[in-house]
Length: 356
Image 1: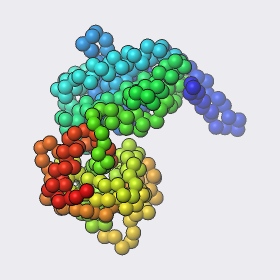
Image 2: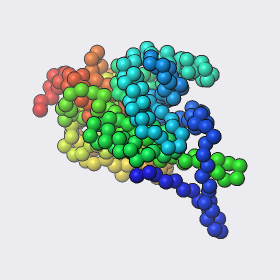
Image 3: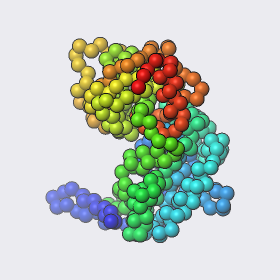
């Protein structure tokens, strides 16, 4: 069903702000171009009006920290039903692009808009804090339709593609409100974007999940420390819901294989408890080497979330396993379905003498 937005100005008597129509679709596109966080805090915009091989233009192109490409199509007011087919057509073209093509797309975009980061690598590292991994770029993709509203037929199609065909397509609704001379944007997603990201990750891979969980444990000075995790038995993630949300996939008994990005695999263990906020996990008798965001200090969204783990095997970071062909991903926790993950688990079992 269609989403309706309303905003009231608080006062002696609540005042409803009037809704207005954008003068042009390009105005909304311009606003998103200036600040992609209007759609997501965790995307990097890499292209605008990207020319395809079949003579049409993709409105906006973005990427997230995992290398997933997001195709963004803007449609003013009520979206015609064929916009879904058009967006899927764009996705079919994007799926075949090489990492070199995305480097070229970003370079042209950066030059046209005078961005400080001139290369794709510079922009990716500035945005996500890590260098892009070539094998991860375009490993999956998502489709997002931006509209004032969707007709019932389009909504049914999007729901069907998600529920029955596991296609990672979503829609975000925008309304514009006026208060005097000021205009305000209101946004609402049709489907939880976390579900779309998870669907994109899974459909971008081939094969069955082997039941083993991958963990990306990013360490940094004065922050998250592998020495702490090894000593006190935990994995953790934080710095925003996008990073911490996936730890809630874990439950007691799950086996996790831990990789420090850029360093290598450092441990395997069994989850021994449910995820909890840092304030609940850290006790006064722990001599932590790193620093962790507490919910009491920075709020639950930015807090670090811990998952207790009993280590089956763990090594210092200096002895990490980092071989060509091992799986890697920026998701804090993932259920990979690629053959590379099967190879990685088998290889680590062999090196660390882990039995089933």
